[in-house]
Length: 302
Image (cartoon, rainbow, N blue to C red; front, side, top):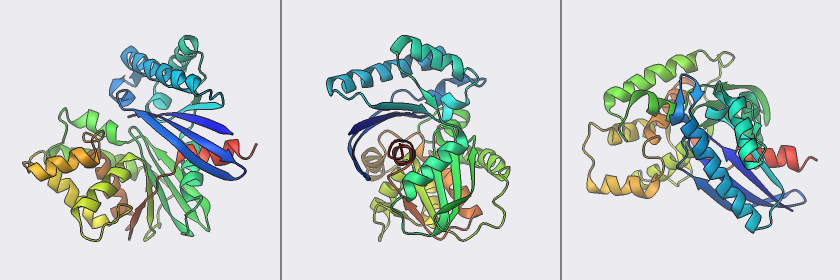
C-alpha cells in the first residue's frame, strides 16, 4: 500500500509518501514547499488571504503530482499557524471549496503524542524528553518506560520569534536576547514539568536537523545526529548578525540550512532555553515525527 501525507506547518508544507507492508514503513519520497511560510502571514491572530492563496497553490501542486503517480490514499493535516489562527475554520473551508481537499486539524497535545510515537518507535532510551520546535509552536513530551508521562504544546516557534523580533535574515545579539526573554516567559508558564531534570532530549524538526548538520561541520566529534548542549550557545554567538560572517561561514550556512537561515537561530534560542531548564546531558536528532506517528497510530492500526 502507498500512502501520502501532506503536513501543513507554520514554515513549510511537506508531502511524504510511504510504502506500507505489514508493520513495515518505508518513506519513498519527501517533497517540501518552502515558499508558503504561513506564520509570516498571521496578523492579529488572523491568517491573511495572501497566506491562504499561497497554501492553496502549494496544495494544488502536490495534488497534481499525486494524480500523476496514481496515489489516492492521502491524509492532509495542519499544525502550528493554521491551527492557531482565529479564522482557521474559514480558511480550511475555503481550501476545501477551491481544491476539494479535506484538511484535518491536529490539536497541540495530539501533535505531541504523534511526535512521540513517530520519534521513539525505534528509540532505545527508556526515559527522556521529546522536543519538536516548529515554526509557530513547540511540543514537549516527557516519557518514562517508553510511555508518555506529561506533554505540552507551547505557542512559541522559530518563525514566530523571527517574525516578531527581526526583519533581517540573521538576528542581532540584541534581537536574540529579546527572543530569549519572550520565549522564556512562554516556556515558564508550562506547568507539570517541575522536577524533570537530567534527561536526554530527542529533538525533531528543522531546527534540530539544521543544527545537527551545522555542528557536524563545526565541531570535532560531531556525527550529524548528536548535539552537545554547549554547542548551541557557540552557534548562536557565531552567526548573530553583529559578527561579520567569514566566507567559510557563509558557505556553511548555504550548504547546511539553505531554507532555514532565517529561522535556525530563533529555533536555537528555544532549544537552548529547554536544554538549560531541563539540564539535558545530550540532544539527539531524530528524522521521524508527527507524520510517521500518524502512520503508525492512525493507518497501521486500522
